Image 1 (cartoon, rainbow, N blue to C red):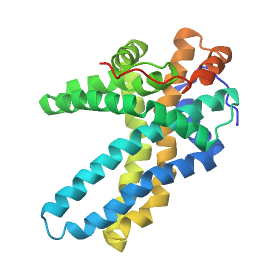
Image 2 (image 1 turned 135 degrees about the vertical axis):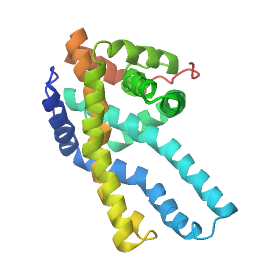
Image 3 (image 1 turned 90 degrees about the vertical axis):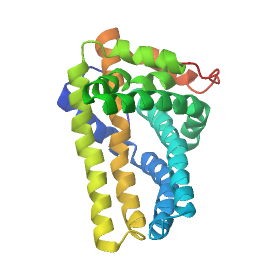
Image 4 (image 1 turned 30 degrees about the vertical axis):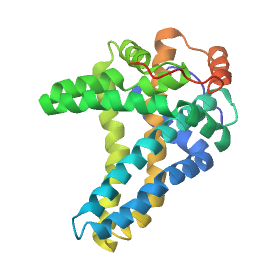
Length: 255
């Protein structure tokens, strides 16, 4: 599948999330399924341990958090490679995408920890700073992978790239979050109600995998749209970057 690399309207960007996910359905669904599988297993086990709070429940909670921290950046980086390739027609084999993801994983974990902490503090202190940090750092993961940046560089790049678009970014986050994350939450809640907490993670697994595909595409699509609009980003430059993605290892994570 090859998607035209051009500036799009807000509505077209939402549609692009679905079209890219559909165009790469096989590799994206398999990726999402594999990344969600450990969480489903731990969720099912945790449902039993939660009946009797104790050390085991703490262990399961920590394991669930650790699995998320490790699998989320792999899903993120691999999806970035897939979306980038959809604009140039480059092949997006799962193995190649995972190699890119593994090379970028630790830097993405660092980025997620730093920006996640800032956003959390912002929301705790007052909602407004949290929303501000969200719009500042929404594009950083895509920039980190595509432009081979470190943590601090990606944070600054995301903030600069989104200048003047804060309200649009916030609206985009809310719309895509409601469409995708809201549906995932509703599906998990319904599964827990109808089949019980032990079986619910397995019932929800294919649906969560399906819905997480356009959710993962959303920030990447917006990143490329801004680069086209502001920098005249073209296929020649993107093709060169794709050839370089993952070819050189990132340096030590720097903030």
